[in-house]
Amino acid sequence: MKVLVPVKRVIDSNVKARVKPDQTGVDLANVKMSMNPFCEIAVEEAVRMKEKGVADEIVAVSIGPVQAQETIRTALAMGADRGVLIQTDTDVEPLEVAKLLKAVIEQEAPGLVLMGKQAIDGDNNAVGQMLAALLDWPQATFASKVEVSGQTVKVTREVDGGLQTLELDLPAVVTADLRLNEPRYASLPNIMKAKKKPIDVKAPADYGVDVAGHLKVLKVTEPPKRTAGVKVENAAELVAKLKTEAGVL
Amino acid sequence: MAVLVIADHDNASLKDSTQKTVTAAKALSGDVDVLVAGQGVDAVAAEAAKIEGVRKVLVAESDALGKQIAEAVTAAVLPLAANYDAILIPATASGKNYAPRIAAKLDVAPISEIIEVVSPDTFVRPIYAGNALETVQSSDAKKVITVRATAFKAAGEGGSAAIEKVDAGAGAPKTRFVSDEIVKSDRPELAAAKIVVSGGRAMGSAEEFQRVIEPLADKLGAAVGASRAAVDAGYAPNDYQVGQTGKVVAPQLYVAIGISGAIQHLAGMKDSKVIVAINKDADAPIFQVADYGLVADYKTAVPELMDALTAAGR
Image 1 (cartoon, rainbow over the protein chains, first blue to last red):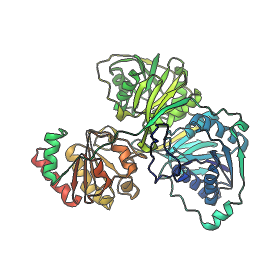
Image 2 (cartoon, helix red, strand yellow; image 1 turned 180 degrees about the vertical axis):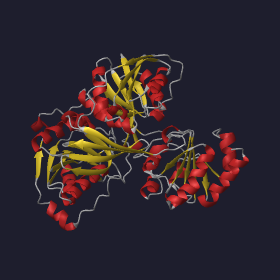
Image 3 (cartoon, rainbow over the protein chains, first blue to last red; image 1 turned 90 degrees about the vertical axis):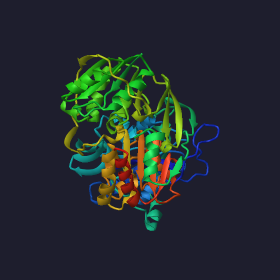
Image 4 (tube, chains in turn red, yellow; image 1 turned 30 degrees about the horizontal axis):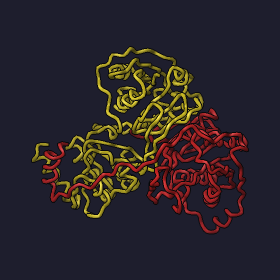
């Protein structure tokens, strides 16, 4: 089975995003960029499937600027076989990302799409669900366990209040939650090998998708800051303050 | 212009994120309908009909809807979509699962987790784990929006909307429900609780977490939360996690015990009305957002807090 894994280049999860003074967005100049952590989890799951013999080929797809090649290389170093970069400097919205991925999938015909539940920049949590809708495939989001057997996949999902397990017919879209696995670090030999793996570079127009989008960002602002309050000496003072001053007890 | 709100419920009762989403919907339009999609939801529909300002309640029922399978909910909603200019959905795990699927079928851009309605086509939503707020204007004639319920006040009671059955749709032919593992608890639900007591990695073990955090929560009538570090370490179950990748809460009182205050965690609780932090590290970032900070080891501070609460009549 071929597994397709979309990966996104985003601000590194350890870097604090700072809003630009002109309110046009978040300042990404000279900021460390990495693979979105949820995408990493999806790549790891695909590689484990390949190691178990469930998957035979892993294709990593990214949509973004020329530097997104590095993100694909990271996936290749983790164990993906080849990459497709749909190169664009536009900040493509989830609906158009889903349309581009659908076009790639129609060419590649994977048995399973494994992807992160959301990217940590836009926090939309939408592409996987939208891709499944456009393909008319079943979906299982927020996966904490994925088991492929034959023509079906059993997915345990993190839902409100606990877990839900679903069985989907393949092909399907599964989105990874935080606890699906712990992604590996690529070894040096694998990083070297990844440099020789092929990456196809395409443009959105190659797939006939207009990436203009439907949403206009009017401004990006800092959230209201909370200021530190007071330090109390002991529990009794804390309870007294909560009762009389804050009025929450 | 009419708005459809899709109710959040567990087939037995309505979750108050629904009432909060109705408030957001009223900022868009005076004509707000509520869809209850589930199985055996008569009681839920009756509750929804009482929400102030709701025009009518639509009920769709099937087994797949009872399990909130995304494909089934989408199939039930699509035939109704023509009657509405916007579909608003609480941004719960369930709502986030099906909202984008509905949007894609309607060829519109979903707008995720709004915290403010600026105008009927302009919304504010957090991005970058709440480190920035984005104001977006949608050019779509029909909008699909998920609503961060904690940012809106619940609509009141007093309505008496008509309840109407609608077609359940084609279900989810390619998806089968296998099992549920829902944690039963007598405590209030984390996302809706007025008081939340959360424990962090300082607890050191699951036993210690239960021994320290749970009695304090019960004394305060609070829900129990945890930091991601505590969940990752196995001290608390996944669905206790408060933070960017867990639940976003905004209770009247949030008590953080042994939590350092990583950005990830702050994103999930910084909108709480009053924040209390107990941590032995005076430099912990949690103190920068806490209204009341107590620099102390939780091992001594929590028992003292229990005693002080008892003395204060709790």
